[in-house]
Length: 79
View 1: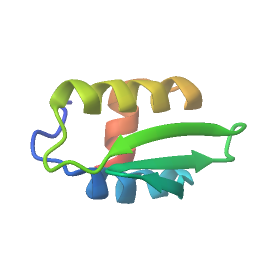
View 2: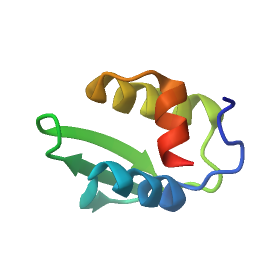
View 3: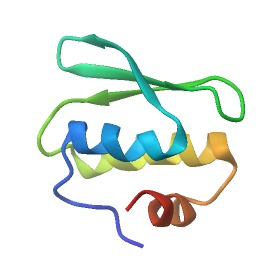
View 4: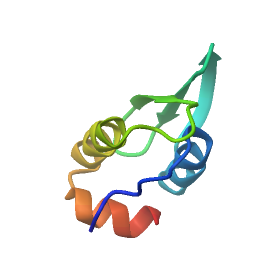
């Protein structure tokens, strides 16, 4: 499955809520999201519109690694 090309930071944060991520803080134009599922995990999401494809890939790769699933499985859960 291809990565979304027109995803904003706010929409990515909203999609990650499905996996238990909550906004814990905001510094400037970046959000810090934290989940307690499968142990504590943090990701930083820029509030840019749109987020660069490489940045999306890095964030989703980190989340998929934390949940021990493939990136394609993660994309199916989120979008």
